[in-house]
Image (cartoon, rainbow, N blue to C red; front, side, top):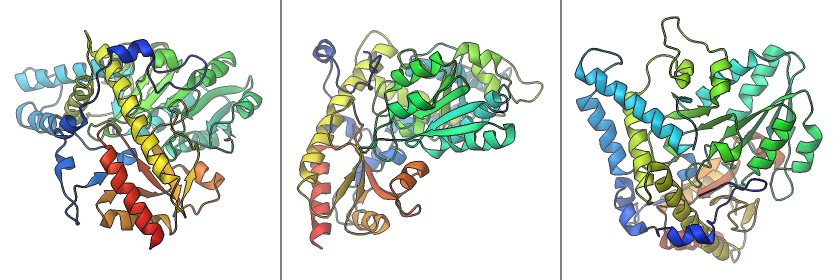
Length: 431
């Protein structure tokens, strides 16, 4: 399934032909695979995990994969014994799964500690090819991990960083992008989905404009990955970075780099390190092999939600089902939220999945930290703060430390949990 429109927003609802082939999620059954979802809160009610924008829970198979690796195959690479050969095979499989997960080519997937660390490393590599006066575009919607690396690089290399703003409903201002992109633009860095308010960006439109100007397309897919199928070909990107711990895996960072770019970028590495496969050029030191085992298990979990002849088609049908379920949750939440007094939704006010994912930024009758604490006391886990979306928080005129209240639904959440949340919000309003 093509999850990204060629010229507009990222699609959320599958086409009719896709939907007829699509399996429906058995949410009750899949929830049984997540040990954390069986826990109960202080009131005796099952815990409600609406904190997924900061990191999702993991299925048991991910837990088992990490533990089994440490027990059965824990070794460094390229040794002449079984455990080391098993580790070599695991890394190869993780690269293959990573390439399939993003719809990309083999050999250009790299792993690291997290997305932020990878982005600092990769931005420094491309920075060595730039000249003073070259320009980089970032956006108001972005997590600072796709902003600060460019700001610091600009200080070191004499570059210019320009920010693309947002409209009143916190969508990317495409008119401003068209005005600010020039022949001096070398990188256009943007997020596919806002981690603070859920806004989706028109990725292919941005990519086409960037490439027309001769610029690289540098995509943050961290918040997009748990909600929509990634396809780097359809996105038209040159670099895509994401975090498996945001899509039901362990703490880890992953990047896809276009093969031509990956081969040509100067990589900082120790002298004996291999130059092959291409993604390995940007990996410094020993990887977290147990996390790679968990990553493979997370991708297999997602694929098992779908159907098809291969891993790619299974992932596509799984994400189609995920998009439908999450839109149902978003619509149900917004229908109830509109009746609450004393609350404000930030950003896109509808559940149309071509405009947003099911992440919501809110302001309420108390400070975000107090609201989050009260919800936590009721066994409802949400986030408060700026979520490193510093440009957006400043644009909204909010206190940078307090920020906003953020909650997010992913495919393991239920309509009953949405109702429980709405009841708690209503009580907080009356209180």
